Length: 388
Image 1 (cartoon, rainbow, N blue to C red):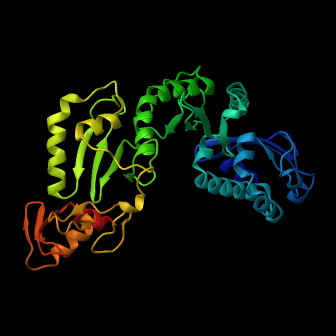
Image 2: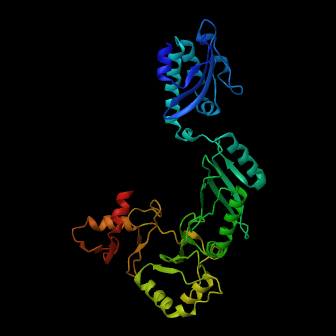
Image 3: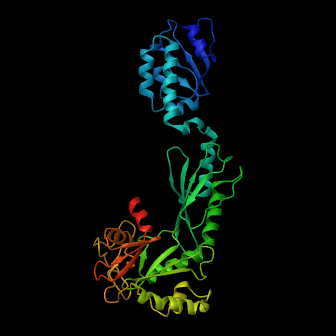
């Protein structure tokens, strides 16, 4: 037994000639874990008891160890107790212990770099300095935090912080619902409070951008996205029945002329496009984007105060639904007497099935399912439909 124990665990050695006390390390996956075991004089493991470390859940089964090992094995108490009672000698139990530890390391990769105790004490100190009112969430491992932040306009934001085991020596991974990449400066001396302050500065730099989109959301009927987030830079705004404009606002220059795309039947969209091109020089960066759009297009946008949103939620003429996953009808028959809207994917599949339709490059030409007038759709719908 002794030769087998020394061969497999050369760092675990007896401390007395009776070989009832062993102290040292066991090695698993190239990591060393401290352990000390005191055996009774008859060397029966059933009556062994632990000697090292603070009170440990395995005390009654005769096993104390370093805090890293305690952290990894806390879910395997019942298994270790059973293996201890069943093992014939110390060598066989250490083999069982290493097997269980191997499983624990494989199931919990984070366990390969368990944070030291000072990690937790420093983290709690940083959270107290930051203020508990700014803490929304912290996981059981004290490695994922969600911090609350409020910008100068009263909007609520959340910063998700994933700390590394060597915090603060290693920079954490940070994410938030922002339209631009979140860039954080971090040094080994940085704290959560400094991180939160940097996040507030980023939020303030985006205040004008969110003010622009909030006004659009408040004063117009937004068709897309259905539930805008702080990440979104696009709004599709209803102009009339089956007519809308898609605007893409630049987060860094939110008051400048946004990228615009008019959607609808040609006989309605063409006059609006001509006005946009002719009046573009009138754009005033000191005015709001919504007011500028009104002046340039020479229109009044339907608003929640004047129209019901159902007036613009016209269903697809093929699938008879308004929303197809995340898409809404954006293809419209150009005949003024028809004007039936379709989902791009639905219209593509319909035209592709007709022998009279023809294809040229990325376009499919065919007839409107309702009025038989010419209608065109891009082949890009095939990829989005296939992905669904």
